[in-house]
Image (tube, rainbow, N blue to C red; front, side, top):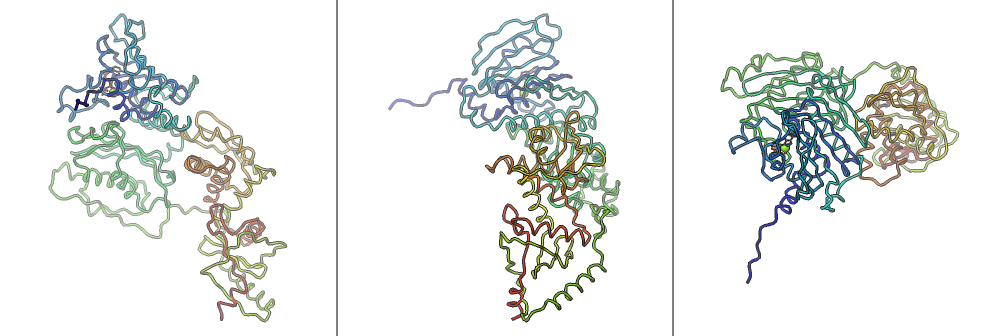
Length: 608
Ligand code: ADP
Ligand code: MG
């Protein structure tokens, strides 16, 4: 039998290896920007065409490369950053594996122009699918420019695997944010399809965060700081008020390298305890400075997973630092550090005592999210009066039947139409439900779901024929978004206008709202809009409904969550009447129960 094993040519090996490093255009941006940072650049320009499918260009004013290095840079395992294996444990640079350029050049048509400071001429190299096509002297500026064209031109399966331009561009933005936040001393200029998209001037960390994520961050973030023998922790954590449903804007960096780690995230969330609204997560920008020999960054090709030798203790310190910051700012009502008064000094003193997190004593009655409302909650007297009224009505209308409740199965018939409605009685249960009596029936209504149902139908109707009544805001309301959120909002503005939203762009990643459809909680407009965008971006990837359906559903859901459940009796009556006139008032578009109806017959059975 003949031998069948052979060595793969470099170009094929590179292409296979590229699969690990270069998964999508954003990976190229990450690797090239990291190289620019390692080359001590102070200005980096990123230019993206067609979400990186057509062109990704990264220019820097860093140290540049010699003619020989420029050629060497594309070889696999060619790096200037480490010499032997032990160097990996002292690494301060972003790269060290020497495989990014080899991988990128294997799956694209790449051009490199580079010149060192004192060199008269620079070098230009063109390489496609790992094959050098030309190498010539070039009068380029000092620094390095990589132009990566037609990514995955020779791996069509990979190209097909890419998502929409918007999604791919969002991935690119996410990579840029990570690097830009870690390096506020470097200016970043971003072009998208030939137009200037964003410019982040050199500044401090807070200025960079505000520039990227908007002004809400300025007041919404608290600085954290702690230093011990094992780690220095610094950065910012968000106030509970600016927490978000999708856990966006959460950044951990170790020695300026972005990473993700569940145990660290859990520590942050534990520090907040029950201060966060349900299923909401705070933004944070947390930096760890640590001796590089105590971490291993080489466990994953993209280096976003990192092993910490002291993970447990660092997590405990992190939790304590955040708790302490929240406590100092009165975010936690009463914080008692007496059990661990020397806690943060523990590591400097090098004691062998095990680390325990400080205990928090807090007042369980305290609710930091309780906001004073201008609307009054139906008071006790009104309730009692209405109960009495209910029984009076019952007495007077009483026929010969006895009545029967069946709360367990609750009638939820979907198309019940209620005409000439008179709501004889209304009260609230736990600020969550309305109990109403009308047309000889008892209705138990979930307020938020009911509001969702009504808004959904109204939005859907106004897309098809009717114009929704609009309410003007007293003053323009400013909505600050992240760059990717504002991209999404821009594409949806025409439809939102059809619905009665008066929103326009106002500078970079900012919008102003001058009006919104009636029934949308106008005071909460910024939250409604951001939640809507989050819902929309998450859901439209999976469900194949029309854009209008998607908008109606996600927008109605976002707005209903901010519905103030406090209503006067009159407001409740109006709300119930409006709901019951709706075509389908018993279930949400997803089929969750909105209204339980108890008919006299049900009562009859119950009292049997
Ligand atoms: P690594 O970053 O892991 O060393 P890369 O393949 O990304 O590997 O880059 C290979 C080498 O090319 C780097 O070690 C560096 O010497 C050089 N290089 C890459 N990009 C730049 C740049 N923008 N400026 C200067 N040198 C660069
Ligand atoms: Mg690199």
